[in-house]
Image (cartoon, rainbow, N blue to C red; front, side, top):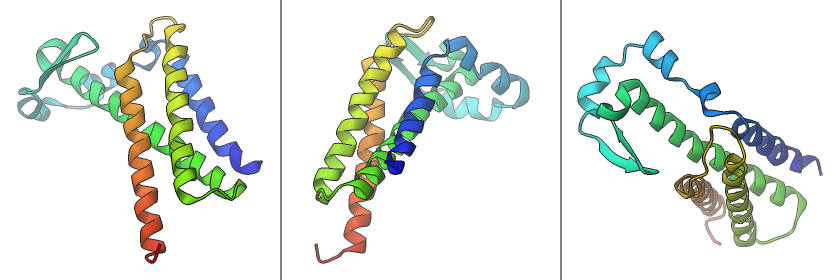
Length: 159
């Protein structure tokens, strides 16, 4: 059971983060007050798209806001990639399931938690659930599964 401590703790970290209102996690003041991001403006200025019914661009968010957007969305991928790795490790240490079943189950458990995380945000003040974030979370899980699969092939080339 000790191997399940890591995914459980990591889910608690995600839950805690999702329980905080957006303004408590806003890093724009730090980005604009402590860092000179002007060098990014010519690089980021051509970017312009819609995410969750909102314009994502320098014109709409400012440079700090656009950088924060990419940090937050990158965090979705990274956090759920780590969760998938944690699930896989726990499954590897506590079961005799085949590699493919462990990979699939680690992915599935992560996706289920990602969906529940967005539901949790629906009941958190000043937070909104968005299916696009589940897609980002799932992308992190897919990357983790791909890494694990490729590593297993490298470590066991005959299989």
